[in-house]
Image 1: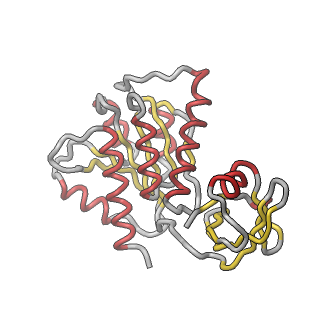
Image 2: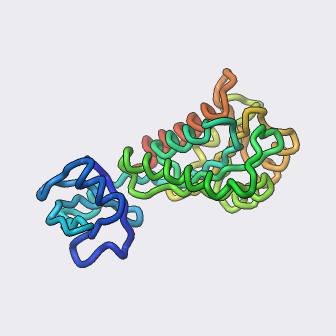
Image 3: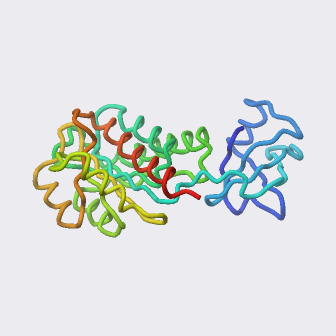
Length: 248
């Protein structure tokens, strides 16, 4: 079933009024007809809706059932991702949105090979946000995860400090035991940050600074993972823990 996102201004009484690119997609690409149904997501909740009519540039749908499909995790996962090379960031965004991440924050770290020029940051972020929206539609998310502004490492730690828990995949002293203990700290309603280094890994000072604000070093196993694999694995672990142990 298809899923489309709207804002509160598009709702009147028991109906949504969908226009713009979504209208074109519904009418001309998907060739949907009156009576067809799909999901409409607004502010973190989804409703089952039925096409009632087509106007000149708007499709009007009536709500059949509110709170139809709740795909939100019982925790909020914030991924702080060291900027990777090439198009790896696009893959990370796509897959982590599918897994239920709440927000992704690109971070400029000391060993990042990529340096994005100031004048290109806006376009890059818009591109990443579009990928997040596409992935959210495909995976039936109730909300489109935000792609934050590119932050310096110190700025990222300042944001992460306000979260309930910060996980730092690195060389863990006790291996998977540290991972198990950290995951067991996660409770419903918590905000959980995950800090992932770039291809060159973390600088020792960066690890020290993360520990100073309460970050917990965890292991992702005995193998060396690429930055994109580490991000997806970390979010997957938190998602599975939440789905298996915290969901009603």
